[in-house]
Amino acid sequence: MNRIIAVLVGFAVACLGASSWAGPAEEVAQIAVPRVQAFQDGDIDAFVAAYADNAVFHSSFTTFRIEGREAIKNYFNELFLLYPRRHLFNRQPVVRVYNDDLVVQDGYTVLSLQNERGDTKIWDTRYTVVWAKTDGRWQIVAQHVSRTASAP
Image 1 (cartoon, one colour):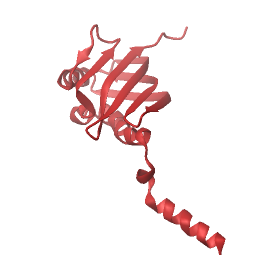
Image 2 (cartoon, one colour; image 1 turned 90 degrees about the horizontal axis):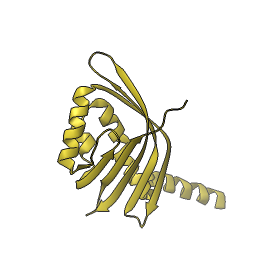
Image 3 (tube, helix red, strand yellow; image 1 turned 180 degrees about the horizontal axis):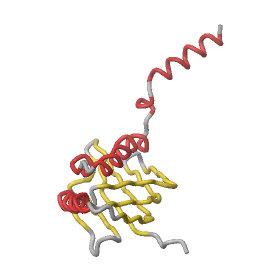
Image 4 (cartoon, one colour; image 1 turned 120 degrees about the vertical axis):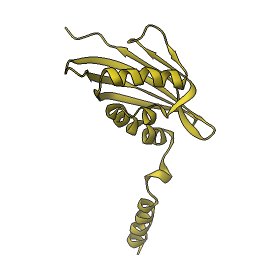
């Protein structure tokens, strides 16, 4: 009898679904994972939707930081036009959660960009993305991307 109850309880827990057990890291992942596809597809609106209005983007590909969602959108829109084919491959991601309202993601990415002529550039990069839950919504408040030194 105890075994049947245990199976029924296990089944009930499984039926609740992952979303009912999701914490901040899982909530952010539900937003972050589709952003990679939006980047690769060139869907600028879907890609920048997660940035806060006052977000800051730092990149070793630009001289100065880019401030605000509109400026970030303009930056990536230009990138998408220059390189219509893009691919990201993430490695060694790390996610840390603080106080259920702050998530920090770090890792490495192989970034492949191809222009209209078919010329391809590939860079190894490292990244940090800071997500804050504001007014019940997860938003990127800061992001940093920098090139790593090439292996000899």
